[in-house]
Length: 251
Length: 247
Image (cartoon, rainbow over all chains, first blue to last red; front, side):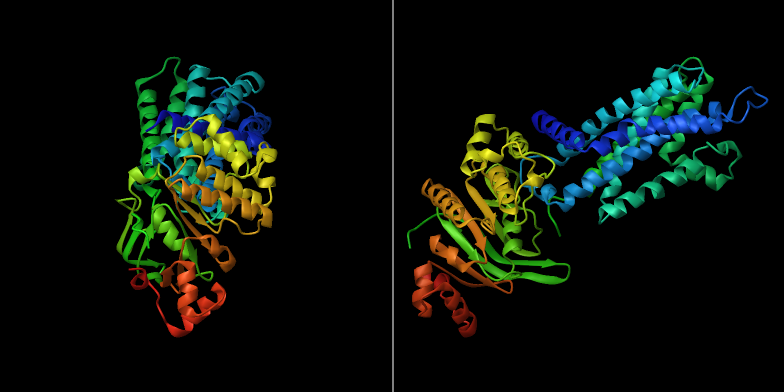
């Protein structure tokens, strides 16, 4: 790893991102807009017997899942483009290491994810009166991690897409089943054994669990920290997996 | 022939891609400190040969030695400049941002960035987005990105396609200057008229080397007045004024 190369790559990708006004809009504004829309629809239904509206129960998950869904295709397409334009091959003839490249991608998109998380958390708590027992800061932290998870998964799955079109198609394929199995709609305890085991190996399960912990507890719980540890492990695994799919030499 | 050191040595090199044999048992050496032209029709394996030399292509059989190391060796990455056929640059970055990025990958400072942009005649387009430049200008951004590390070996895949004749002449003058400074250049082209500028030529067809000699030698041996007809004559006769002719 080389700090100059890593930083130069981060700056390069941020510059490219900044030039793409629509991608910027997607990253910074869309998740907040969807949060407001989500609130506007789900708060129409009155509070249940527990005194909570559907938005109180689901809003917290939505603000973490949307950033992941936004970052996945952006990361996957940017990497796909790097392969298709010949710049990836070209980079591999320079002293740059694969990890420098992925770290540059990771850092640039994580900075985007951080900005995104701040905006969406502010909107969720200020505009849509989301309420959680735990701190909004913890929610924002999980948002950032989930967005970074989306980046890492996007970089990894881009290796299996031959076109940008396929890279986009991977997003629902990878994310929607995770959403079904994460325990948002059906509690995981009520799932039959095989579904439960399947959801055990999906990263979004731990995102949802961590958010449930923050939603219900005023202090950070050990289980939340364990969940965050698992999310970080998934991110590292996806980045290493991504590095393994990058080949300096074409067969 | 002057006893020059060898920059690139390909030994019984065989490359199979997607079931097709692209290079078949190629043995050839490229001398240091001169311009070697790599000529042949489109699809004859020029690009694959160059990709092998820069370490982008996996070798099926045989060997490729570049500046004394196996092709693709880590130590070579600082010493080789590569300009691929289609410009491998970032279209959403400006000229100077592209060159600055590649400079940073080699740990090279800003003054060199402006130097190479000037050298390829793009000072006026410094702050233009690469995507808005013409094809020839994009190719020169790509060239600037390769020149920025001041490479000992420069691999140029069709660098002058679509260029204004004056610019073409200027670039060739620059290549000759570089060779005079001891750099090695391997330049591919399908335009035979550019070959006159090269100290040596490698003619390729169908994944094999047809001839490797000085331009004059090829003309003399084929009794032709231009390289285009010499090429045809070589294909028809199967004649090989090859390494044998050079010793």
